[in-house]
Amino acid sequence: MKQPAGFVDQEHPHHVWKLNKAIYGLKQAPRAWFDKFSTFLIDFGFCCSKSDPSLFVYKTETDIIILLLYVDDMVITGNSSESLDHLLKQLNSEFRMTDMGKLHYFLGIQVQTHDKGLFLCQQKYAEDLLAVARMKDCEPIPTPLPHQLNRVEDKSELFSHPTYFRSLAGKLQYLTLTRPDIQFAVNYVC
Image 1 (cartoon, rainbow, N blue to C red):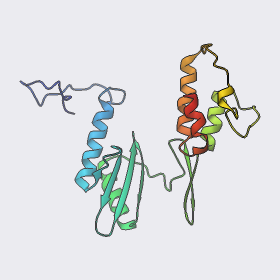
Image 2 (tube, helix red, strand yellow):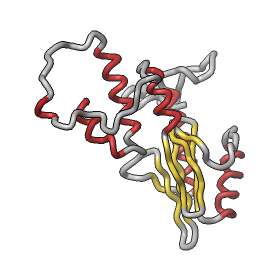
Image 3 (spheres, rainbow, N blue to C red):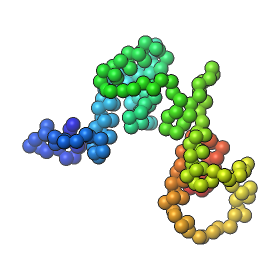
Image 4 (spheres, rainbow, N blue to C red):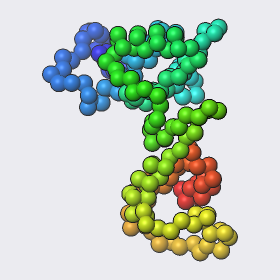
């Protein structure tokens, strides 16, 4: 543990609190975990992506490994079995980990492997979203918006539960990762 940036005690810069409980649940825990894990990866030879700080890339002349980290879950892929095995051995020596095998489900996205690549879908996520919205038994329609938006009357009636509505709208935005066909309608609602 380290003292948080901006709160370093100048007289005792190396002192930290002794914890009588696990670090999980503390506000500093995610930052400390990410710092420890990313430092390990960078020392191994990974570079952190500038566009996404949770994406790490390891490149040599012949090998490439891509690691995506989300809290304490990760997806690792690469073009060399030997390099991946070496990385996994190093990770297991430093951290307590469980290898879940081939990627099937990650962050609400189902992954199916085919000869030509991967197929990503969010069917389970969409079904769960329909259940949360109490719309599981609704009839499907070809388009989620009226055909002529300019004819939709502006109803100034406020929603009775705006937090609930915003939550559903945010969940719909996440669904557009694999359903770009609903992107316009979701952004219109947002």
